Length: 519
Image 1 (cartoon, rainbow, N blue to C red):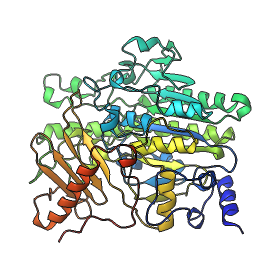
Image 2 (image 1 turned 135 degrees about the vertical axis):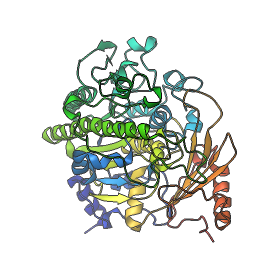
Image 3 (image 1 turned 45 degrees about the vertical axis):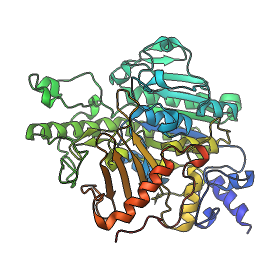
């Protein structure tokens, strides 16, 4: 049997094998297909036509939270491919979302804070040259739902008909985005208050959008829907069991927390914080760890963690109901689902609460792909980042990006990794800037294979984690003489890629790690 015909049949049936994924070199994979025939043979491509794309983003969902989401595990993890080293190169809401809109690293799109200089909705430029614009030009029906960039809805845009490129625009408006019991929406220029818990409102609207899109032009026009769930991001309104109500005279205990749906409140009341070495750790060499927490603060942190997991249950149910609708409407087999978080989240790890830290708990995001030709129930350790997701969506839709892409097409990474039967390696530049605005970075560096190497700007102190021997990143090995060659190599990679753009960003994956082993 002709191998191309066999792969096409596998794609039509939504199945694949390792053999049929042998479409790229085991040594390196480039960012984009070189021909239309190759494009049709890659995971997610259909023999005729192009797939629908459902991109689900969950705010502040850490990669480690997925184990508490049974529907996501059953319907996505077991039915698709999980990227175990997916990261947010700048782990914060706005820069992560701007990368999803542009396929660019934060040092290029320069939207790296949630407010202030270069921050938030007002700081995002080039709105007419984004992923939805490219997909719209490629013939897709484009739909947006949920949280956009921080600050959206506080100005005149509150009453606009939507952002460029979107055919159907239903974004939550700030500050109501974080009123989880009753957010307000800009529905194509009309302000609506559904009076529903955030995840329920988003689930209901997403199903309606998919239903309408499925009948658009006889259902022949492919669609791209980006749904942005807010839970488990911190939000309100404050309830009696929250720290501010329980400890009104102790501000030190007012740790930021979320608001679960009423049906989920207390479901994880017995859940303890992870008993991992990085929990509340600030040992030798932890130059970026926070101040030690008191016993009372640790108890509140456990409550914060419990509420986050409870809030995620509403998203878990929403995913199940959305997939059920796709199956019932006959659209499932023609749809690629990309499930991810915008950044990771720390709840006591390294004595921190939140994101934007250089640790894996802050950087790592869940990333799962399901759809035609995508292998079921496998894990791929090859590193990918937020910019790659935008590049991949454009490639799936055969859309032409209006910006030189920093990212790579993940389906090619998947094909090459499965063929090689091993993890493939590519450096990813990482950086962070002040949350509330500023042009001086907090840290810059590189994440490559087993290593994370960053330099803290304020002190100039280098930090090296070797996750192969220290997976929870409790030891800074930058000053260890055994790692001198490793540091020198990573420092050179950092210098090479910290200002990369387009073709000068890392695009190839190698079958072996070029960084020398510690001696």
